Length: 287
Ligand code: 13P
Image 1 (cartoon, helix red, strand yellow):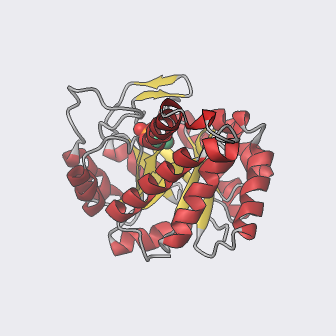
Image 2: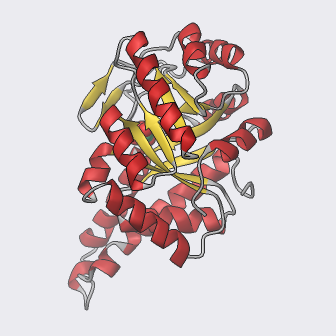
């Protein structure tokens, strides 16, 4: 069931658990995430970066595939189709394409400009029942070629963006995208606490879910994180399982070269990873 992320995140914040956003790259990814959410009776958010959207030939293709798959698989749990780190133009294209949720990432703009653009996107989205995520304090690491510095967001700035009426707020708390370096200092819980105190009921979003230790994830959830984004971890297990299949020479046996066979171990690995994360985030049975 394709819905905006608003209700599922309000419920998550009130119920002290988090909904996972799993980024999708193709049909196998989408199918694996949807089937796992249904099996575990968990709400879920499908994240689509601008790069992944382009790879899948455009946001319209993605929206059409997700809507049709949701229907043909008989998915009854709430599913939000969400643009991840959208530009102003990307956000408008996804609104047009039929996404149910949008992240407008204006964190690299001066605050005034981030506020003005966020406000405009929020107005358009809310008039169409689409939920909106905005960001304060750039999330570090590399995503689609954009390298952020990994700032810690200013709680006052978070409140200013929260007050615009966003449905979820991404705030940098020392988290970065991709694999964490060995000398990573960990999440800044004092900053998270201060942000939650300023923003109250606002569901907070933790980006860069890959590689954050389980105890830090659990603590972040107690401090108001209601949405956790995971991308790289699914890519790593998919690659590992696919490599295992080829290294074992299975593509050379019988019809093992058939893409439906070749991609199956990777798809199963994504399912197992998504299950592990849903259990950790506490969203199982919350649909
Ligand atoms: P990871 O790739 O580090 O899991 O981050 C995902 C993310 O935050 C997408 O916005």
